[in-house]
Length: 388
Image (cartoon, rainbow, N blue to C red; front, side):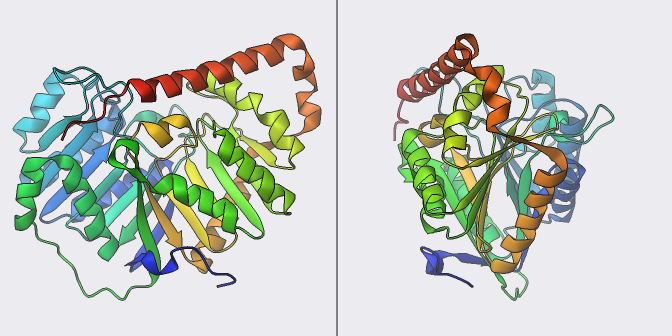
């Protein structure tokens, strides 16, 4: 490796790591892992929509349950709140254990912001997949069009045993009691890749993904690439980017040109002039929506998962990322991102911002930025700390 990296000795190992660029390849990998499960499956998702993609996913889990696999499905109560009651009963009647994380209201607390934002599935403690992709048609390549730009990591090896424990810990008391009965079906791996799990849960005193993003800026020597969905980094992180750019580090951002949350796009573009002034390169993807959450530093390190650079991921949501510390894989992944930049993105320049110099456009973006920032901070503040 060309340089040392913080906490290098704290990584676990994986026999196989595969970067998946959303769409069909992700859902095929998901189905393959489910089909290979023999004893247990744990999965957690923010959104499970009951569309074609959601129906196929549920069917795969039901097939697994029918052959005796113990399936534990944890969904966010808000993100998956539209799942029809009839389908919930169908899932439960198939033998799948189904739970919903953190309803907005219950008799103990008001919890608008404490959302389960994880996207993870692990089978038998030996196969796993972690990313930013929910279960819905819009993340899939369908006849209606290309899926949203997003990423995941498929892993094998001891890291999957750790992923399984993360899932069990969130499942609850019943899941913890079941842990002693679980079979981890390991098969003599020859470990090759350094991988580690990073979680964010402000109330659980876990800010590991945030820390890793900051470390990547501090320790990068040549370049940094960030794929940013709902990109609204705080002041401290922006100052770190500024100092890195001043040291000559080339920073590239892959951001959305359109969004499912219109206010986010206006807020994001409020930062463009400042970012360009620092020498930071901005590339807007031409496709339907950037939903990926990625950071890559030099040819040595990268992270993929559910964490967004904004206040909700820092202070409200439960987030889960995987990091890979491997020069060969980082180099190959950088080539993938550079290809996306070159073939699917438009670079934003200062010339493009000339039309924003009028007071109206600047005011709209300023209002959007501050309104969205305030709403995120307020949501985090109103979220009750879970009782022990």
